Image (cartoon, rainbow, N blue to C red; front, top):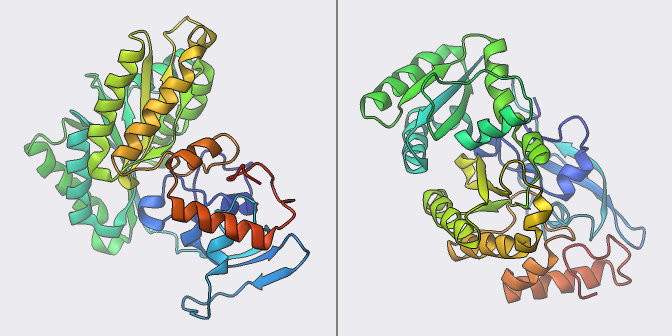
Length: 343
């Protein structure tokens, strides 16, 4: 299998995934697109072909040009071919929805499962009850995971070999965590159909958000331990800007990447609150950066966030980026306006 898995599956392409260093739900185990690529071929602005389609794991022969081009968002060259890593299909996959009291308990749950399961932990996604409310309002057909509704839940997927009795190890770990009240309730899928139904809840979130209509859709990351503090601080900050606004916070808790999206009240047009959009965006990005985080975790900078990169980017980093851009694309013909605006 090629383990890159994200919402745009089926329409996105390998070149775009590498150009943006795409992430997704399996980053906790396999890393971003950069981690899944051994070599690339690319065409530079002057027509030079960089032939780096090797499959070596170790190659210390100068600058790491592959990883320079990956994530450059088409501003340094056009990726035309790639050598990708694939992995054996797991013998056993277990999908579970776990109810927790709050994001702090979700972090404790993550650390305990990492101790017990190691790299068998493949996905760890935070979901709020607000997200389920959005799904209902969007007309999505899904089964409420728990009879007794709670504010927070985590979708967990573990995968590995049957020989280690993975499901049994996982169930025993959950039993211990329930005894210590880290988990309030748990559902373990007993079939592929049930597993797909649980994943449908998480995978439908972006479309539900689109239907409701966000004022601000963010893609921040902070150190995993800072996620509860970020959610609390950002939520309070949004309410100070307007008590009418609501937040749907969800995402890749296992790697510190949270999608903190802000919406108008139900049955109100987002245009009524459009004047707050810049303030909300700045608030979220400021809090993330102050917590040693990033304003763009997996969606890149593009044209939308170029001013944020100028505002929050390290001076040394920006200097090097401009120098590299000027050297590889002196006429600035590749994706103008992306990443850097001052050329």
